[in-house]
Length: 242
Ligand code: IPE
Ligand code: IPE
Ligand code: MG
Image (cartoon, rainbow, N blue to C red):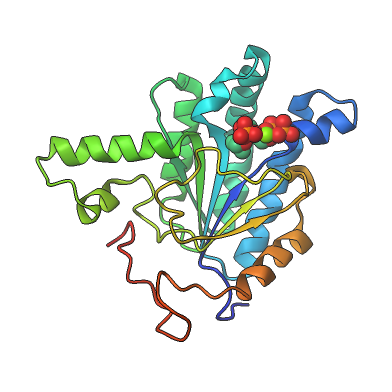
């Protein structure tokens, strides 16, 4: 089911796993495990609503600074989830993409990423971009380095196609769960004209009703892209895919 106010591309900062676990006197990794289930539910719900692209923040460039035990727990969970969840995601028509710096990831994680991308490359129902070892600043710098390496002029038109999400349009709606109202180095370039929705719900508790609230709020916004009310609402900004 799609209507004109359904966003094409939803991006989510999946925050609050640690607090979800702490509230239950559980280790933080228990919250991350629940977070994987929440992501599966959310991907299915997005598909059912006609959303074409879901981009999620799973591990930031800065998350390496967490205690070593949590970082290794997250890496293990990520590799495990990749092995376990890909067949179902594949059956659901989900195309998996992993966005971020690959250098520094273990051979096990890299293998999981490569296999998941290869297995789901032809799927068309939903593109699921998983930002892992990702930072918005990293993205801008790697794009700029590629522009420079090709001897191109540094323009928005030349930089856009070099950005890590150039295969999809910019996000229409960026959701952050967990109560914080900040971007934490997520899609700095791509969210230039995104609508933002902040939810106090901790990510493991984020369900279909919570997603619908965000979509409903999005549907009430007037996106002006620098114009005045009543002018054509269509963006004239160059997008990643231009
Ligand atoms: C988000 O949840 C997941 C990752 C950053 C990997 P947090 O782990 O940041 O959870 P809180 O914010 O501490 O509750
Ligand atoms: C952002 O959450 C990163 C992810 C959700 C992967 P953080 O919990 O790391 O963000 P800060 O530290 O509160 O800004
Ligand atoms: Mg957090």
